[in-house]
Image 1 (cartoon, rainbow, N blue to C red):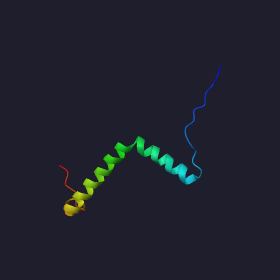
Image 2 (cartoon, rainbow, N blue to C red):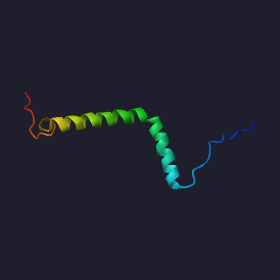
Image 3 (cartoon, rainbow, N blue to C red):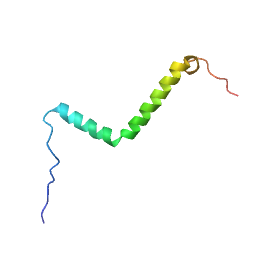
Image 4 (cartoon, rainbow, N blue to C red):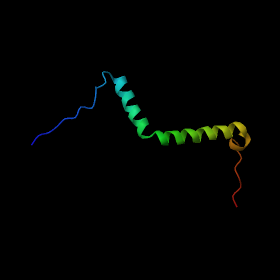
Length: 64
């Protein structure tokens, strides 16, 4: 029985490179979800900018 070790490329030298490599893998795996959240916040900020009295009001609506 033989085993094979696959080469996964060069190993980053310092911790900063390791962090960047892991962050890049995370961003590639979750890029669509990150983009959706970013668009949500952009739209939310647009609404706050255009109608701050509505979206930042301290008044609560009465419940019926």
